[in-house]
Amino acid sequence: MSLISLLKKAGANGFGFSSTAEEVTEGLDLTGKKVLITGVNSGLGLETARVLSKRGATVIGLARTLGKAESICLQMNDSYYPLACELSEPQSVLECVETLKNANIQIDALICNAGIMALPKLQQKYGIELQFLTNHIGHFILVNGLAGSLNDYGRVIVVSSAAHKMFSYSNGIQFTNFSGSHGYDSHKAYGHSKLANLLFSNELSRRFDSTNFAANAVHPGVIHTNLVRHYRLLVRYGLRTVEKIFLKTVQQGAATQCYVGVHSDLDGVSGNYFSDCNPSETSEFGQDQDMATRLWDVSEDMVSKLINGGTWVDK
Image (tube, rainbow, N blue to C red):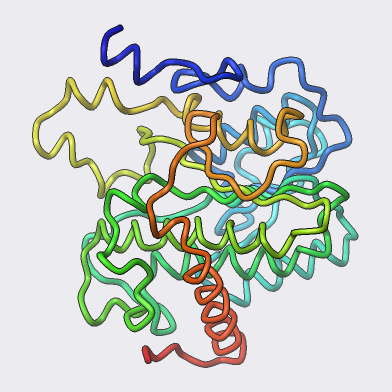
């Protein structure tokens, strides 16, 4: 078997690297299901929304502005529900949560898809490195705010990345450098936020123990989307042939979060990390429960400061 064939071999469930979102949801009737997706207006979020809407789900589509969330209406079924949610603005996230709670919407799957990647220069907001704030803290506020709105057997899917191990800091979560001021590397900062996503999912799953809820993290693959505009390492080094082998299409990239979000194969499955629609290994830090619990506690402290008008100061 060639290296390419080995890398793209399907798993025990019949799905793998080359599977698309439409393929992994084929035959599913999601009528009556409500799925919330962040970053719904482009890339993986748009494809995930389009396919799940096609299968009958009511998609609650979140984007940075209402206009962006509404921009995909023509690609969705008649039950599509667009909302504004700027993940780097705690008040915007809280307003979105309040809107959904007031509407008494019960969510079957909450897909934390949105994110920013590998910003070339350090950017901060409220004293926090922007990738960490957007990718982790914004979703932390959203998920905790909507935990009471999860339907029976509700699922939370957190989009992490293999970057959590490829571009990790040597000691994992940077508990004394959430600002990025004490040393910034664009790729490591992205990997840092993706490790936080994974640990958040793991700790959430632990806290869901003895309930019917589930939380899992996914690696979608490396995909040709706007997200990678600062992250084209293969192109930078002229390895275009390798890039064609290892990068997925958007349709393939959306498959894992669709599969983990709605497929009946995963009823009752929680606390796992999926890649290519199958369970996958994480880094050592990705399995560190003490680090996950500490991150949760610090995240709560951080959120408390931000929603009360404060600014984070590294300890």
